[in-house]
Image (cartoon, rainbow, N blue to C red; front, side, top):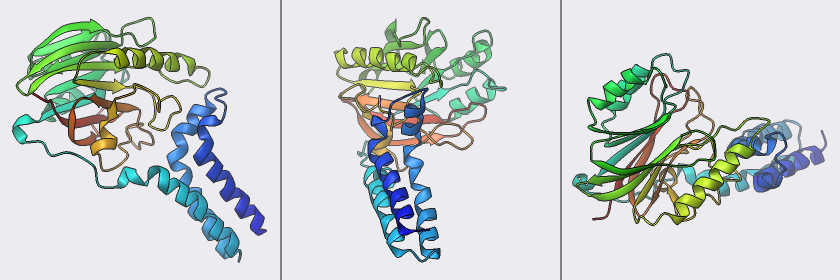
Length: 303
C-alpha cells in the first residue's frame, strides 16, 4: 500500500471525529455515528501497525493525528474526577435505572436497587400490569413513592407537589416532584425520553426540545434530573440540551460511565443532571435483569 492510503484513512478518521455532528442524520445514521464517535479510535492502532509492517513510516506518523484529536475530545473521561468533598452527614445518594420492559426478573432488579442503599431511586419502564411486586419491594424500604405511567420515583424523604412532565409523546413518561431532605430541599425530575429508531429520530429530538425548554425555565434553585434519555453524551442534540445543567458523570466520574447495552455498554444513554447542586462522586452499576446499567451519584443540597 502507498503511504497515501494510510494518510487518507487517518484524515478520514480525523474528519469524522471533528465533524460527525455535521453529517446529515439520514435514517438515523448521523445519530448512530455520534454515538459511536468515542470508538473511532479503535482503527488507529490497526492502521499504525499496518503502516509499519508495510514499511510506510509516513503512514504510521499520520495516524498520530486522529489519536491526538481523540485524546483532546475524550481522554478527560478517564482522568481523575473533579468531584467536590461533601461531609458524610450532607450526602444524598441518587440512583436511576431503566427496569427494562422485557426484564425476566424485575423483582431481582428491585432487590438489587434496594441493596444500593440510595436515598432516591428513579425507575423507567416500570412494568404496567406486573409492577406490584416491584412496588412492594421498594415500598418496604422507601416510604414515599411518586409515579406517572411507567416512570416512578422512590424516596426516603417526603415528596410533594408532584406533576406530570411532558417528554414529547402522547403518554406519561415523566414526573417532577419536590423532595424535602434534612440537608435541604430540591426538585427532582424522573424522565424517559422516546427511543431512537432507524426510521425515526425526530420523536426523540422533539422530546429533548420540549424537556429542555421546561428545565431551562424551571425557577427552582436546586434541581436533579434522572432518567433514560436515549441520548448519548456525544449526540448532536445533547450539547445544547438544558443549558445550565451539568452531567454528574462528567463532573465526578472516573470513566465514561457507559450504560447501554448492559452486557457490554458502548454508550451512555442514561444520565443524572444537576443544577445548583454539589457532586461528590458518580458511578454505574450492573444490576441483574435490565438492558441498561444503573447510574448513580452522591450529591449535596445547599442549605
